[in-house]
Amino acid sequence: MARPKKDNELTYTRQINLRFTDTQYDIVCKASRDAGLSISEYIRRQLMKGKVIAKYEIVADVPELKKLVAEFGKIGSNLNQIARHFNQGGIHSQEMRQAINRCIAEIYEMKYEVIKMAGDFHGNTETHSK
Image 1 (cartoon, helix red, strand yellow):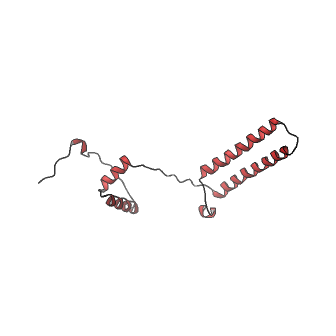
Image 2 (image 1 turned 90 degrees about the vertical axis):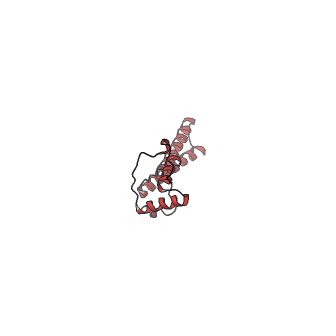
Image 3 (image 1 turned 30 degrees about the horizontal axis):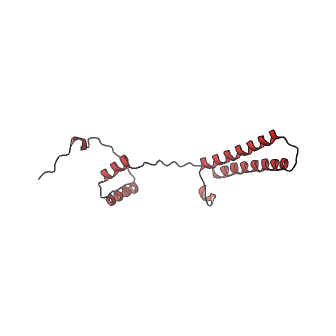
């Protein structure tokens, strides 16, 4: 007895060819077996219903990045010392105090933007630079 024919809507007429490394192919084969699906059906379902996550690896010169973040910290520290001087009775004006506070806020914003762009390094940074 022959297999019943599919509706035209369920007939796959378009083809896409993919190349995988041996490791990638093994992962897809195992995942399709675990799901109880053919490789084609597994990939089709992943593409149509799954999330495709693009990962980008940003390679940064870690020593330079560390130096830049350290410089931001030093500038912020200097500005804090100036603000402390004014807060302890040094000659100042309200306008100057506001300008210093704005500068401190901008420096911290820049510092966090640099950290965010470069990623958050944990542990030994020497490991990351190899």
